[in-house]
Image 1 (cartoon, rainbow, N blue to C red):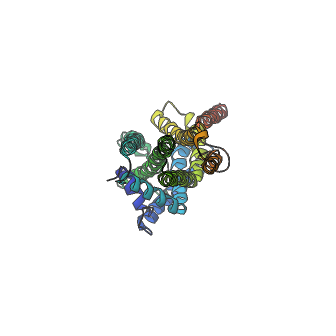
Image 2 (cartoon, one colour; image 1 turned 135 degrees about the horizontal axis):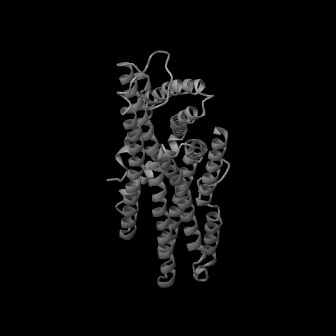
Image 3 (tube, rainbow, N blue to C red; image 1 turned 120 degrees about the vertical axis):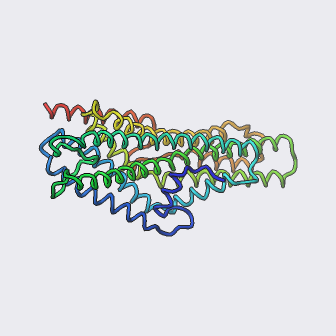
Length: 367
């Protein structure tokens, strides 16, 4: 039994990133759907480039679809690290030999992460539903040229005339739902894996506390060496797991935050009309930054546990082990944004500040 949400599990299977799967045709079908949608979106962008209001509305949807396409491409190149993380998650959740307190801690953490994943998925889905309902309300508009598409696009024919409009509306709705689905899948895996890093950090601290207690109460050197080896394995496992998260989400975070920062500035200009869209974008940015901050805190927790131990009770050979563990733990656990920064709450404030600056430029340009 494992606690991966259904949409995360299905999403990873669909793109061939699930352990045991080599490739998936559905991945290429979804990419083709997105690319075809983007062709007509960029065509519309070129047509309205001199009309600021329509240009900003177009960028709102175009950037969202472009973002998920780039993230899926990055995910495809990082499928090995993804499979390592999935295997680690499943093995830890199904580990029968894990001590009871750690098992309970792991399951509580994973359940909390699951709830957050569902909230993220609901936010994305609600945004699509609100926008699609707003478009449906223009269906009976007179003349029919006043009908609105969910995704701002231009077509080389009279696309707002029935039944062409209905067909395009359904295709746009499917595209938007897939866009939201994969945004929530990618962020869902981030939330679950970062939350699970807490369990791994807790496991390292628990093993270390157990080793200290053994030094105080036992003289069986063989038993101590066995537990010392388990501690080393736990620490290396924690490092490998967090390195995989960094490997997957470094460039995903860069793509997402770069485009969403621009998007927040663009749609912030029209914030009154699309509050759900703005809220979802800021929630997504906050999710990445919180994940980075949380992951860093788990590395700090391990380092503090090692530094605050009663080192004087260890033998000289074991003190060397402790020193090496401390030296390795001093290399901060983090999720970087490409090569430009580290995800944290401070980075979140910088993104908001930059978005507001873009918004100010857009308002000045409109006057």
